[in-house]
Amino acid sequence: MDGALTMDDTSQKRKREAVKPDCRYFLGDRPCRLHKEEGIQCRDCARYSPATKRVLVIKLGAMGDVLRTTSILPALHKQHKEPHITWITEEDSVDFLVNNPLVDSLMGCVSGSLARLQVETFDLVINPESTRESAALASISRSKDKKGFGLSPNGFVFPFNRGAEEIFYMGLFDDVKKQNQKTYEELICQVSDLLYERVPPTLRLTEGELRVAEEFVRSRGIVRGRPVVGINTGGGVRWPLKRWTLEGFVSLAREISSGANGQVLLLGGPTEEEINRVIVSELGGTIIDTGCFNSPRGFSALINLCDVVVTGDSLALHIGLALNKRMVVLFGPTSATEIDLYGLGEKVTSEMDCLCCYRQTCDQSPNCMENISVERVYQAVERQIDFSQDEPK
Picture (cartoon, rainbow, N blue to C red):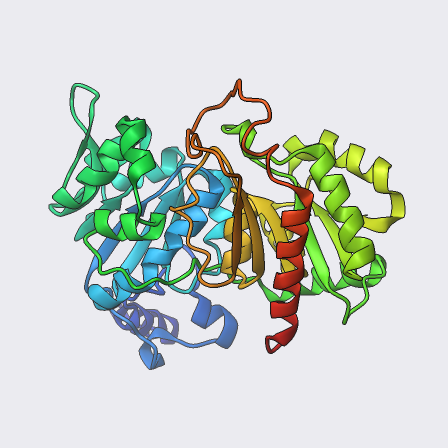
């Protein structure tokens, strides 16, 4: 009959009426996770969670900085009563936010995301980064409440709120930066007007990633029950002086492989290909080379195999903390004060007045990293191995 609804029309009408686009799980262009995994329909979903407050977090920068900024998420959820959180970051950092239960929507910093920022509205925007790029994103975002940094029409970065002023001046003056006694997490909570709760960053590996790592264990003959120490040679591109010496890495790996009955996993990224090649040629089969071209999450899964991780102030440091690993961290030109190890390890620094200089080159000989002895690092590793063996698995 004309105008009558068929069975299919009625079914479609019921589905339209049942859809809840304000739910935090709603995607719009594809089935939500609950429907995909369990076949749940909107009409019958007991986990419907309306997004009553929408928050945008903007954090571009280095991957390690993006990961450690996840430490604010529990405080954000607590203080703003389970908000819907959208996070925008650089494409290469998106992997570190995947599978994070406290992030509802991810945006890579691409043209499509910029278009979304022109349309979507938020109750709160948080941008703790004072680069022009991130500040510009905060300024064009549609919200009446903004924390952190924005960009003026004249191209100058400025703090939105009083809580952002301290970190603003730390970025401008080296002496202010050096005098700082707050951790990065404290400062980011201050910028965001959040109560600081000292929560480590979050990184959740998938079952598939854990299985691939276990296959690596079997294929490389790693013995369960013997300590596994990861030595990360990475120091980043921006601050090359953060990297320890080649001689230090070689001697430390040799000591661990013999004296501590340990197994050494050599870690690094693409920029460490040459130094890691030399280390492998020096030590041969006494260490296990994990390669320098792993994906960010593959690299994280390898770190997860370790009982202790030795690293400078680098991405591996933040991954290790997020995975609850025992850490030995070497500091020189960057701030040891700003790093919270959450009781998971110890910091090793040299006794020099010029530490935390944030210089990319140095005319001191030996410099701060060259002054860190193998003996001190090895003793710290032994202590952390002992702690790791006392902890429940």
